[in-house]
Amino acid sequence: MLRLLRAINVDYLLVGFYQSTYLGSFLNTTLIETMFDYQREIEEAVVLIYDPLRTTQGSISLKAYRLTQAFMDLFKDQGFSADSPKLNGLTHETILEEVPIQIYNTHLANALLLEWESTHADDMFERADMPTTTLLEKNLDLLIDAIDDLNAEQNKFSAYQRTLSRYQQSLSMQLQKRRQENEARIAAGEQPVSEADILSANRAPVPPSHLDTLLYTNQIGQYCKQVNQFASAAFSKLYVAERLQK
Image (cartoon, rainbow, N blue to C red):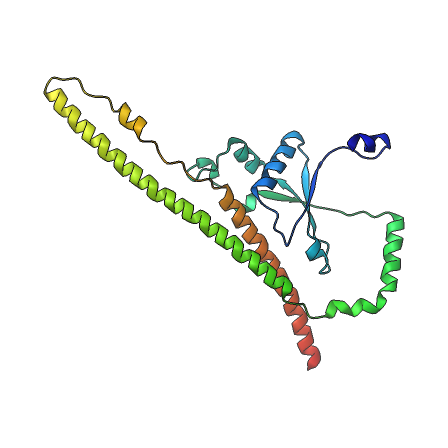
C-alpha cells in the first residue's frame, strides 16, 4: 500500500496509526505495546483516537496522543512491579501526552460545508434541545466497570502483600532455627551448616504488575471528565430553559 502511494506522489511516510473508540475506552495493554513499538522506531509517531459516538453529539472527537518519555523508559525496563523504585513520580496522568491537532480543509471542502450548512438552516435550533441521559448512562456504566477492574487489581496487590508477609515470616523462622543449630554445632566443635539451601528452597512471591492499575486509573479519569463535560452542558441548557419559562 505504501509503495502504491509513493508511486502516485502521495505522502507515504508512516507516522503512527489510527484507532476508533467507544466513549473514550481506548487505553489498554495492547494499545500501549503498539504505541511503544511505533515510538521506538519513529520518534514522532502518534496515535489518532476517534470517537464516532461522541462526534454524533455535535463535537468532533479526534485526538492525538503519544507516550511520555518517562513512561517509555519504564516500559522498556518493564519496571511495573509494585515494589519497583522506578514507579516513583509516575502517575496515571503521566502515561500519555496529548498532541494538538489542527484540521485543514481544501477550498472545495469548505465550499461543500458552507452549502451543507445553508441547506440545514432550519435545524439551527436543534442545539438548544435538552440532552438525553443515554450518553450519561453509558459513561456511568463504563465508569463502574473500570472501578470494578481497579478494585480487582487492588485485591491482587492485597493478596500479594499477605503472601509476602507469610513468606518473610516463614523464612525468618527457618533462618533463626538454622542459626541456633549452627551455634550448637560451633559449641560442639563441628562445622556450621550453610543457610544457602534455605534461601534457595524459599522463593519470594512475584509482585503483581502496576501497569494495569495505572491504565484503569487513567480510564476512570477519562470517564469522569466526560461525565463532567456532559453535566456542564446539560445544566447550562436547563438553566437557560428555566429562565425562558419565567
